[in-house]
Image 1: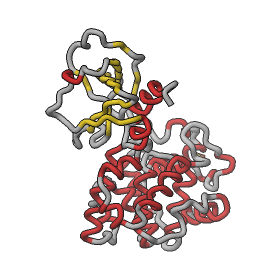
Image 2 (image 1 turned 30 degrees about the vertical axis):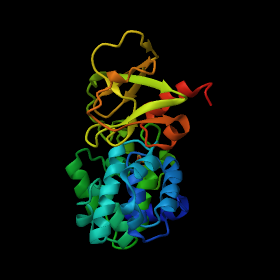
Image 3 (image 1 turned 180 degrees about the vertical axis):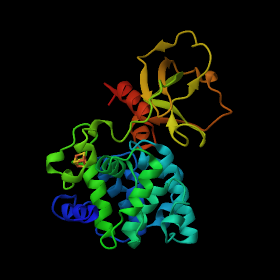
Length: 325
Ligand code: SF4
């Protein structure tokens, strides 16, 4: 049996069924789920997806929302550029309609070649090849292929004439379940007998890991100002990290006299590590703020929790809030 047919048969019996974005051809819902699934696992995405479609049942509702509302609902999913791009793309789609082919879908902000293909497959049944992390791992191992260009060509060659939706889902499911990165369950895999990596004992080597560089570290100081049970947060400019999210103001230069140092927080980005040193100041220290930069707001803990916050701000609020709530 051909590779695609084996995967299709396997998916029917052992793949993931009944996910909230399955069983629809609505390109809006499929696009939303595929963007959320970039870099994030299914179990994490499900409640976010459900909240989004309840609040924004169609692309028009999402396009009319403010960026602040979208980011607040995205808060906790990470990779906030995805949330901002989602909102920008919603406005384009509301004006121009949803693009109809993988090539055109790939023009939307925040949608790469593989995501566009997945959307075109599930919404329109287009025969387009995906190569997300899961599909790449399965194909690299099953066929013993290393280079990305070769993998794309292989992914296209393997596309079945019929059943493209189930085949695409099968690649995602096999990579997410049996063909995992560290401990694949080859004995239950539908293509184990033809798998090159298994035959040549190269499972651990494929796909070739990206070269790891030592990540540079950046240090920042955060000012923690409290007044009557509220904290001062500022909205970051839309370019740069955490654009549009609410953060503690940053302080450049020396810590003011009387500032109390709190335990640092470490946060990893793709290209660097951030060490955050929070400084607790008494209220009345607002002159230390560079007021020309961004909007600021005093928020109660409850207000802050409902706002669009990056993870380290949430962590710090959690620490500060112990004993307050
Ligand atoms: S046999 Fe193992 S390594 Fe090969 S595709 Fe299946 S799960 Fe992956």
